[in-house]
Image (cartoon, rainbow, N blue to C red):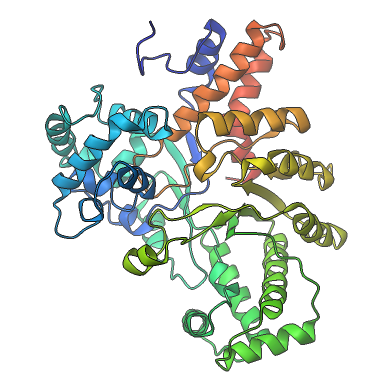
Length: 467
């Protein structure tokens, strides 16, 4: 019987073990997309206890706890202590077996805490104390945790109206890990609610130091902020959308739509679709002008539970996979950009696994032969960033594209303990390839395998993003 979480965790063959330990394990991490706080890095925050760094804001864990019968007060409530919340998580962990949370939890306890005990109600007090003792030392501040994980680059997620003051502080501090902003302009096209949209446009106007009264003003303000992000080292944009938007529109109609909503009037559905289509195109043109990578996270249906949204707000664990058809609008959007020679490097992430082969085949339509792997299919995301989801993504990419040009894993996380997801991915990749070698499906050519594994784990992303 193989021991749980030993040094060869997930690695089933001798070749897989060699590939991981010799070629992948010690490579630096390029975490090109995440949601960790630049303020917490800039201030080198010290967390008081394991709940603060591990459970605050972690909607993956919150969903599991609710499913396990933990009342909301014991998950997110203000009257429950941090230790009570940790104990509630410990009660839940034994029931997460075969859920990726079980693996992630114990990987994160092992690194960086060095704890190999299984978390349960019986061990929760001991693990609580062991974690907190370490968190209260300088070796477990945010920057120290990043160093321990061997992270070379972090790409945060930032709104165009953000001052990026904390990125500037980090850069001026001489911190050895490169922390760069990523442009996330979703709110600039979120015209579903006139009042909220106008509040945002006023915020963007203040950041841009100009009035935004017309559609041309909006584009000018966004250009100014885009230029500022570039000055701060930005290399990529990111868009979190339920679908691609590729409706036909005219410039005149978009100007009229913006004027209408700026005057406080709600838009009709067709106006919303036209405006979002126009903005998504304009964002893509901006990114192309600077050679940025544009990323599209497609397919989440968010805030399904109105009662809990009103109580807790967004990103609280009430989102799921959407099932809208994607191929036609995705093709139309990318085709327009390619036809106009304005298609920059692009990473497409799907949340619905039924669309795997759709995405894998869409890539080949828009490769231009000038940049290797110019159009990428991103790693399994959100509900799919687990062993089965990542294996399916890589198998489909292998069958229908070039896995060797894949830019690999990202955390997409809000936690400083999530860098173990890169280890998880690397083990899964090495196991897949090692198994193929031992079955005689891939030749055992050490130099070829080294280039293949190290490219996917590190070098492809480094070159693709020009870090």
